[in-house]
Length: 463
Image (tube, rainbow, N blue to C red; front, side, top):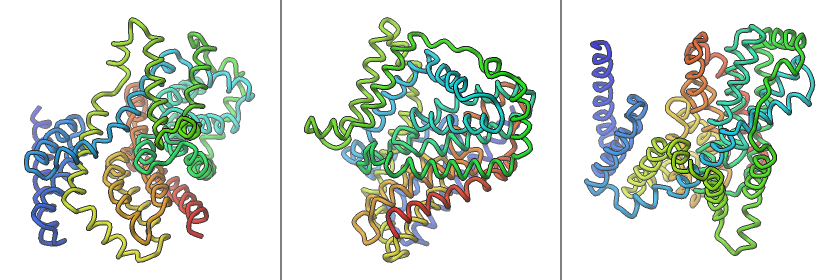
């Protein structure tokens, strides 16, 4: 208990010192006004409080919002504008839809069928597992994908009696990469799509191709650094029939669930065409489809609908996101974002290549150090302001997306999928992955995948 209190006191001391130093640096070092320095310090305090006191992060979001509003640094209109209710509702709707399919073991059943028809073991089986991790992260979201894919991977490793650590890391790497392929694969993708008014088709045309190239690069790197482990997996998996490798999964009404999934996914892909046909504003149906899918889900649940909403929607996280997004509005209202955009434009002149590299690296480092949602929430207003400058362009949004997702592979805390994977390992009593163990593999994967993404963005937009 004393150790816990001592650790909390140490964190509190670090927090207070960092806040005080931030204000002094901003006010005296960067020449911001007192109002701008206070607004920036409070937002930084919210972010730092989230990192140091993760279990009570919502408290910091609530208190930070209270101080910003109570001090007049964040007006009600800006609070509502930046709270991104469209993003929150989209995520809530998709959580209900995916929760229904997850409850009925639809994804596990689908994977078992795919594995059965693709043949036996060997290196091909490792490739298929990682490709499916990438694919399902793009179709649903990284959290749902990592939960059921990792349970399959851990089950396979237990049956084959091999060390699961390399395969856990590879599954997470593939999941994070796949989450960048579509607008629904990751909360940051949703944030960017709705903020930049990018359609699902835009992601399929630009992000999906880049994500697949990054996946190929990742697999090649992983085959090199985990060659012995993969070959051991391949050899042992060939000795067991595919039927014995995978357990049978029930999926409730399989035909109904499959039809429901196909209709919703098709509507998401074709939302632009639906908007044009109905005369709606851009991305209206992206939100509409999510809400409609949630409505049908609750009809199917009937009497258990209320409990389903209470258990399947992560209200804690959504409430935190909303307050975080709203708090960043204080930087816009106080003029800090305008100053940052001008400084960014001055630093890179008219070099879009350097601007793209800078956005990807800065967002990536923040994501690996803190959390990709926090990083993107801070960067979105900056990228918005940069659109009016000489270096403005859609390429900045893609640079932000891939910086935030690909650098999530760099550290153990780089993305939600990483944290969930580590939690599953601990829960099953398996050997823990150390920070340096992850970092060593993470660097080797992140550098070539980020370089691949940057090269493809450059060829598409800047060459």
